[in-house]
Image (tube, rainbow, N blue to C red; front, side, top):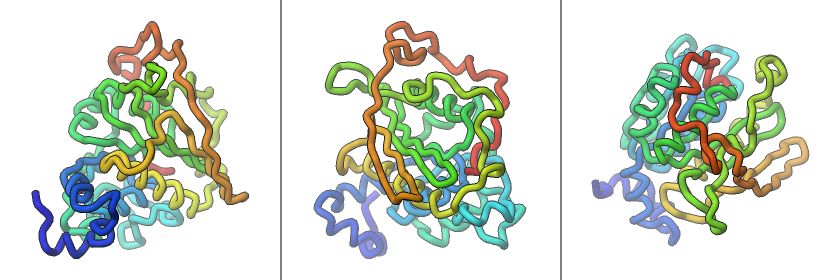
Length: 277
């Protein structure tokens, strides 16, 4: 899978980067990344990964494009209202970079299909917008030993980290995962979604772009991983801060006495729309 002359020209700004170069670009070309949700986060993630030359992009989403998506879901346009988001996103990616292959999963991620789907990819980017899906993705990535780049949005804020809980840090403990940050989901109805409280569209662009960058870093080995750190963005103050996240020995997935060893805990759960962030 050598780079073609056209690809060399397309990616030359990467190729002259000492930290990336030909070897890094080759890694991107050979990589397979799954993006969960082609919405507010998934849109910039998919577009920047496609532009960067990631060879295969998987998109899982069972929703269709609606007019009120377009304020933030920039991979879609008005002509695609009513079209499956996976199909709309794939068409944009093809126009952006015909060298990128897309694999469309126009379905919901469930406890029955999560491991099968996730195991096909090298890195997972979670752009879902509900707790049930986030816990499912977290657990499936841990069991499949796949790096998970996670992002979430608020009306004027965003959160970003990388989960590599199947590996250990410098102290010999597992890297933290989603359950270390949120041991329990909040009761239903206590956290409003963006359709109720709104979201400034460009916030999704900021966080999705940063999420794409962390995926690229995971694939190429450039820079430092966010594993063990949570980055928080406040758009109103234009402020970023990073906080350390610790492993919890009582974590039911990776703790000293784990009780979650498969995805059966998620069986029968109703997954809300996964991509309308």
